[in-house]
Length: 195
Ligand code: AMP
Image (cartoon, rainbow, N blue to C red; front, side, top):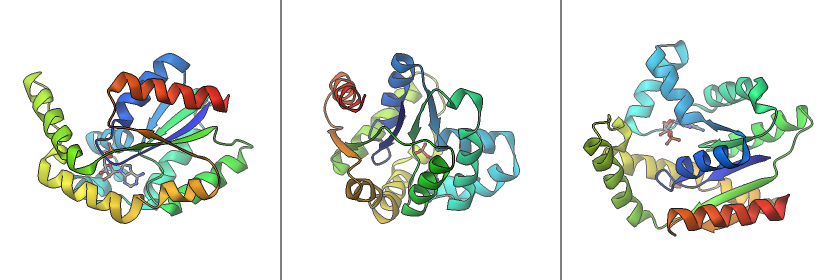
């Protein structure tokens, strides 16, 4: 099973991806997680990405395509994967098509979590408050001001990715504002159809 999860930051992609990992035994490939790990480890990629990420911008296509290309070759991705936070530009979507074609693979589904962006800002405030209450670190880019910049980056560069897949007949849209379990059930429905 090879999936792409689309939707703006805060739409619940990470939460749903984790559930899919548990249920379908496939890996979650989150470029955001990989970049955060690179930043924490102080690698050359991390050093380049940090300022852009902290400001809520998009890391260059070249960097993220490079890390995804490497990650898709790892043995644990052979059984399938969920891409979460990638592709975020049409150039990334095209690069993914080429990478998969070279490996003789194709996507089984592209699922977009459709959300109300105004309500997202409230959701992100809650995420920050919950993390704070649990004593966990609040992501710098979950700060409401930075979050709005991330939404702007989404609307400017990433909103065109769903139509890219729609034009190819691959896009399935799901109401991402529904309760988490309902969203999971809707995703399972799409996957059952794709199987
Ligand atoms: P995320 O956890 O997916 O919200 O990603 C956190 C941050 O990492 C984003 O705001 C971007 O700065 C960067 N990032 C993650 N994935 C990508 C991508 N596919 N293209 C460009 N930048 C990305």
